[in-house]
Length: 340
Image (cartoon, rainbow, N blue to C red; front, side):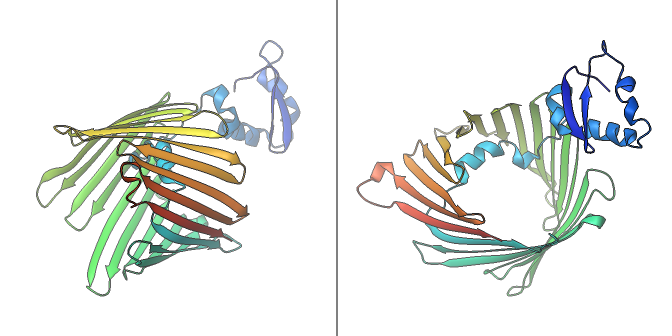
């Protein structure tokens, strides 16, 4: 265990100060604990205490392939709801074992309403979770997940869906494994069947990922994607190539505690269709934030989110067509989030 002069922290309810090796050896520093029965617990907690990550250079589990560049994507997607009026309600039991999520929305252009209900039941002592979903399209879905039981870091799930009106059934076996430097996943979609696989490796802030899909019925590769990224503090860079024809990238920068910015760029080989966007989120205070984004198609989006009270949040958003400002076609949205 490395020792550092003048560094202290509270572990196992004990305030401990670590001195330099020139002052004393680590066992001399911990001698008062030798007979307290807490020494082995203290050492175990020391190596798992994330507060010392900047000092010890602790290893981290990289994100899944689908979550690469997610921070920049969230700046573009969260805080907006163009053309819909939406209500989200989340609640859970006092023990936290059962969770209920329900949402309903109405399209302001077509008037079509949609809704869904989700129930989650967790058995933490067994590493089991049950997730059931229903939506207004009359689709029933059930997912059973086992995590950290067969092996530490291994997650296995069976996801099934059923449409009573048509009798259509589908199923997918999902597996994932994550540890320091590595995050891999493999899903088998029985409708096809199609095998989806992805892997992400990370080291010293660098991230590299690969994603593929293989159609077993046609014996051909259906998807072939690569990604490369870098993360350093408040800065993140992500690039990707999909099927060798679609290229994209994003940059995320947290300027300060209140301002976050993001930029995206994408283009397709053999086409002049280049897509570019810039977005920002500014925290007015601890309960309110303002979001804005614009792309090269002159579509301007603005959003305002306000927490009215703990568990009650409202979002107002608008999409403005800059090219056709006087002809209309603009969209507004309203969202409510309730959590109890």
